[in-house]
Image (cartoon, rainbow, N blue to C red; front, side, top):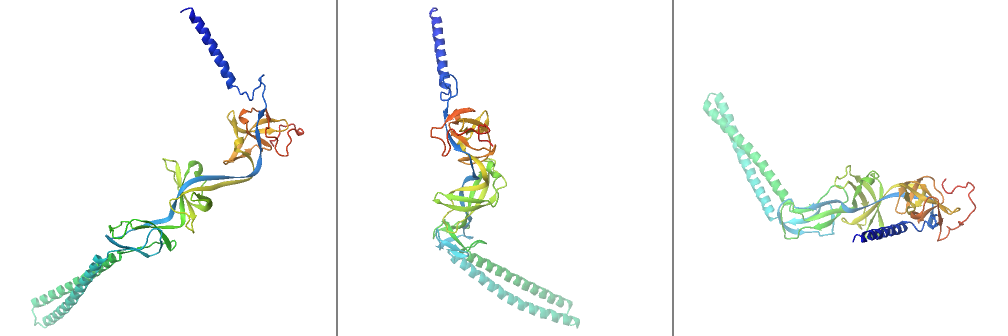
Length: 407
């Protein structure tokens, strides 16, 4: 057994060495390294640096809300006797929506009116008594001055006068009380006729939902129907911290909905929340969307695009041209005279889904958009798809001898 141990160790060492060599060969970029460690020609695709316009556009998703919405509900309890509207019906300002069973409230009005009549009759009676007491008191005063009536008779007449005066005042107060009770009964009776009333806005709205049917027993404030204003809608968005500072009130927006994939609707930012929610780090933004044809409906899912900035006459490269080398962002600029590619660090501005704005340096020429992951600075390239239209592969050398393209 001891004699076999050295042999086993030798075999293990040979296997490890063989595995290491296989790993090194597999890890080496065979496309870029030749037999003698020389850089090979890398096939690439290129695109021209454009001078054009790019827009910084934010895309957000949200939900449509009615411009205004409220629920029609009774102020008193009762049985829903008639419902004059249904879902989707147009409603005008102060239109009669529903009626409650009013029999009980009619009886209360009649009772209050009868009590008022009784009180008014009592006023007339007490007014007559006051007039009699007044005359008796005046006669007693006259007789006392003539020393005919005694002091006690005068006091008695005066007391009767004051009592009659007080009773008359009480009767007048009772009349006012009964009048107030009658008005209250009439108001409660008017509550059995339920109308749609609102301030401001258009005179016509629509019924959104129905919550009760005829014959239902309702308590005070039980909902009957909801009334919506949908001539304009509000898109409710939530934006992140990154885009929050770019959004301003008054910005124009473009809104699209899955229900109308080929139609865009215009909108405008009308409200921006001054705070962000701690849980999501997002802020509420409201976009007002005119909806004169009522195509859009509350509750729809929408996509909203807001243009933050527009840069014209700037240098643009395809987004696929951007790469990183040693922690720096840049592009490989193709030299079609020497058929090489040189890495150029760039600083970018607006970036969209296809292109990126190059702020510095002022690029010109062609950049590598495919195959740059195999390139090193100054590496040789080839164009399998051929040179760009009107661009020979081997033109005359640049008079400056520069690798070409950076102004």
